[in-house]
Length: 386
Image 1 (cartoon, rainbow, N blue to C red):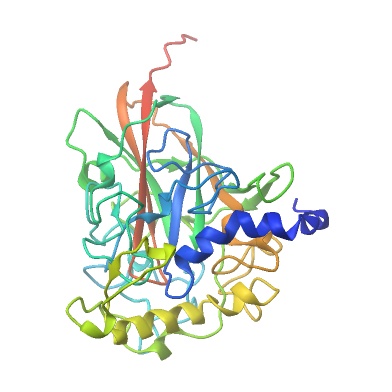
Image 2 (image 1 turned 135 degrees about the horizontal axis):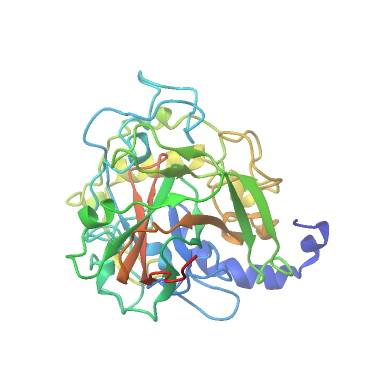
């Protein structure tokens, strides 16, 4: 568990660990996250970086949270309306106050993505104000599939394996893990053919040893989602960490507003490190909506004032202080960046041996965004005879 002694970490150390991700995403950030396990993930996240996108306590990088797709909307009506599966405005379905009705988690797996299923750098070919920027020295909009392959993690068909991801900025929703055989063309359609099942009704919060001494692991219940999903029969898991519930995003205006790339009011050069000296876009109306929606989820209030969520959470916390939207400067060891969400998956026993790519897909509910990272996997057949 997270002990009270973790609050005694030197404040200077805490500040160094999280300063860069704060600079990267504060004001106007949308959901960001990254795969942290297996170690063969191409975007570079790990259990030490957890949800911290920039600084892992030792050096800068790997910016794994900058591979995603936006804007992303479901093509049809929402299929996920039950409050027990929802993560934003969970008791609101239909009508003008249902602000998330077209966002990815409302029909998991149906919203189209950009790229091959590994995300694209910055989420869009254009740099957008809400954290939509590619990693340093990486062209905006390139496919995550082009990242260098890693030494593959070995999985045995029929076995149970571990995976994990970290949240940098919390926009609820849920996620799945999928495999694509490298002999086939790598694409979202290929990944959708092999969506992996979860092995347990439990999952874990794995705390980063860079923020919490000994890096404890805490068991929490897992919420499985199998209805209203795509592909039919696939299994997804609800994001277990609630964002703050300061207000309903419906008060911010049209939830389907899109960034206006041609509007000069939202186009300017950012000289600071947060956007690596890029020019970013969006238009003032869209930027105002982004800021308002983030504030409803606790972007500023939760980041700068003590308690992770000063008022209410979108749904009950699975564990003490396991809630919020973003980095908490008073107690960063309780922030979104402090832990990975760990799951156990079942590798199909009839899966052919070979070289595969694992895709983690996180469909957000609080925003029209989808995060994806990929990892290299070798599948071997268990030849043990009984």
